[in-house]
Length: 170
Image 1 (cartoon, rainbow, N blue to C red):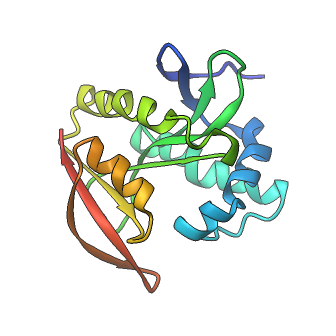
Image 2: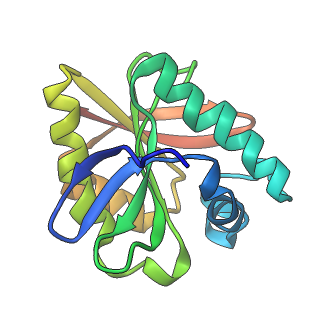
């Protein structure tokens, strides 16, 4: 077993790199109805699909960019709660803040607690701008983004879908 690499630690939550041991949680998260509605179907229908997704999305991002989506861990229980971190999309010039929680952890202000340390991590690593994308009907995410200083920038079309692009200057 490899040692977990924690990127950010707060009093209640820690963020660490996602690894192959997280396949079951990633499988559940990416098949959650809210994930499918707001993020989209990523074709992850089996444990093997989840392993491939982790390797190609998360681990590859850590290696190429030095950042990615990180696992949000409850410090008290050690439970995998969801993901939060920075993504680099080919279609966008600057990194994107992204997050998603398993259903049982939503509504507990977890995302609100982990976004500020992620933004601070970005500042410390000399990122100047961040973006965030959300569907126009994801009012919860829009509220969270605006609360953390993101402002609406424009509409972005991707795979036939309209997405709101928010920006933040760090």
